[in-house]
Amino acid sequence: MTRVTIDFSDTLPVDSVPSVSPDVNFTSNTFPKYKIGPDNVIIEPKEVSARPSLKEIVAKETAQLLEQHQRLSVRDLAKKFERGLSTVAKLSEEAKWREAASLDRHVLLKKLRDVLEALRGRVAGRNRDDAEEAISMVEALAAQLTQREGELLHEKAEVKKLAAFLKQASEDAKKVIEEERAYARTEIESARSAVQRVEEALREKEQISASEEEQDLEELMAEVQEARRIKMLHQPSKVMDMESELQALRGQIAEKSLQIIKLQKELAVNRRLVENKSLLYELEGLECLGSCLCVLSRINSASDLSNCSIQWYRIQPEANKKELISGATKFVYAPEPFDVGRFLQVELFSNDDRVTLTTSGPIEPAAGLGNYVEILVRKPETEFNVIILQINGHDHPSNSIHTFNVGKMRIKLHKGKTTKAKESYSSSMQLCGVRGGGNAAAQALYWQAKKGLSYILAFESDRERNAAIMLARRYAFDCNIMLSGPDDKAPMGS
Image (cartoon, helix red, strand yellow):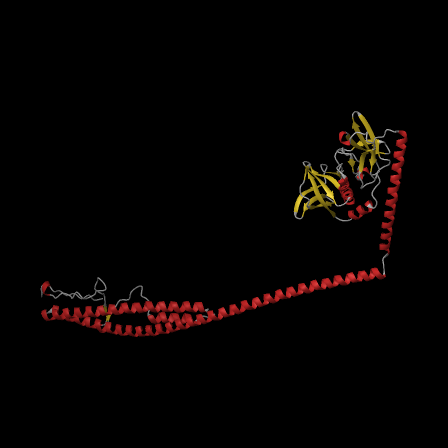
């Protein structure tokens, strides 16, 4: 590299050199470094971090677009075009910057050449040769700069063409995007409408199938009922005949039993009247399960029952053992299943006088109750409709119907989904008939679910009340629990 040195100290004073115009725009603070090649051609040194040329950038982008093996989505294509537009914009800005820099260089070279021409006319000798050499270098640099500007103009034209192409491609891509979006929305709407049509068709099919099934079921039930009616009319079963005969026989036996009990009672009363003319009281009622026994005054001179203290007992006929019935202190008592086969005795105390009344015979079982209980035992659980009369000894104001559920492992009292009590069989549970309390005592029972919680329940009939007691005691016996009333000492399995 050759450095040009000009010495002005020998020829002209510094003040005689004209200054550079202030309009000149220098792009750098140092004088550019050049190399002189063959034939005095000025060569600019290559920068270390040289940027790729516009042709290389365009070729690279084109190769990347051509090398795509997979189908690009519309969105990816739009991104590609937008990236290309941004690249072209950057290149355009760079071209404008280079054009401005080239213009500045031309002005600078012109000023420098004018200064050198002025110096060449004022100097002589060796300094003149150096000035001429410097002028030739400036002219060569101007020629090279002109060639460079031509290349830049060509590149600028190519950039404009590429920008126009990419702009058109971007617009086409946007149109394609809009068309694809519209097509996708149309497809989505059609798919939604198709799904709605399918759902409506399924709902209609389900409704039609449900109505058809219900209609078929009703028709089948009607056919079954008609077949049963025809069968009963033309081929009556022997079982139905036997059941009707058994019901008739049970009615006759119950009627005869009532007559026998009544006759026995009249005989006992007559016998006692003969033995004791001063008999003041008597027991009124049938001596069987499901009835009520009531103490009545025979003569007006007898003491008022409200002023008497009363206590009921059960007596075993074999051992003649008297057992106190706890809580049975009213003049009315309804026998319960524990009393079957035993005599009942009541003692009245008034003014230091004691009167004892005893049933004429042991309490008889209710007709057909045992078979009814055997039928219920075959079920896993049995439900009875009841009304709660008392809770923990206090009257219950509501007369709503509840369900008393007797199962193999526990007893449950509930109304719909609301459970009042639900307890398994245990030694703390008690169950017996209500001991005293009017003519409805035969239909009521006392149930202590656990300590601190007791109920008095009224059943629809005395048969259901006695069946519930017998069924619960049988299930409790299977669990090794003796289910009885307060202070009862009945043997296991009774």
